[in-house]
Length: 328
Image (cartoon, rainbow, N blue to C red; front, top):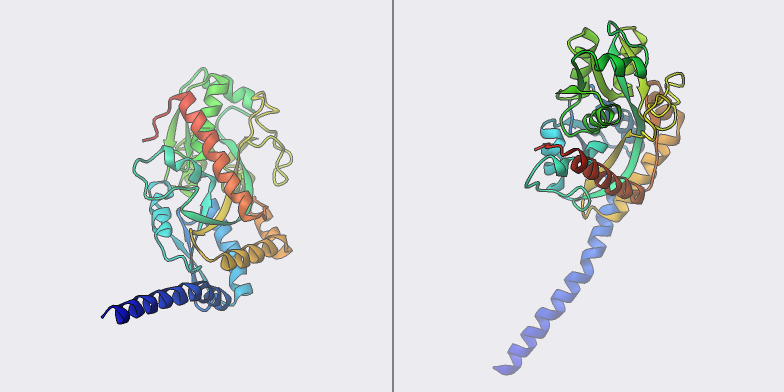
């Protein structure tokens, strides 16, 4: 009885080793045949906002290059946490992706008991775009520059709109308040698309929003952009001064978008996506569309995305602590 039992154990061990050896080969084969069906690109925000627009421009080009449909799926709510939670738990096969904005780096400070970690629950693929935020006012507001705006805010009660609580726009507004000594009431919206409607209609006097969201209304004369938040002037708005130039020395904030996949997505799939997205962003077809919409194309490596996420969490976490902001 002992001998057959020993043989059975050895046989089971051999099967286990053989099966384990086959797993990487199976994963490699699956990656090589990818994509064999449509992919879902989840956007954590409402249609019409900056992240949605970038996703559709890049998604359209990815469809053409990969030969499979990239379906943009808007899943707004709770500053993106609904979408991020779903994607983090999705099968890591390369068929579920998510576009994120820099606001992902603020989410851990806004919600308790998250079911994902921005640093470990996703496989970064590439950044796609950058844009500065802008400080803008309704055209009827009697302020044509930051100095006049600050003076006005010290004589009357003002409010500022953003795309939501705990976004980089919200925190940039709080930083403006801190650096100028003014007090403004924050009015959060469910996305930049809704905020710009009320700003252009005069329901709110001011806003801190992504430049791409504001530029059309700025050109139409309904709103006035006072400054961009990046340290350098924007190539899209070369005549608009920076907040740094306007007296808020050292102010440097910009909004980025990036594409992520669930953690443990095959490296071959991540590499292929990175190659395709970088090629798309360097081609005039997508680059010019992004520029016309107010963005600058920003290809990168997965490692650079990881650094952006880690640096953003460190920066905003420090500011939230300094200002004693309760985002929860």
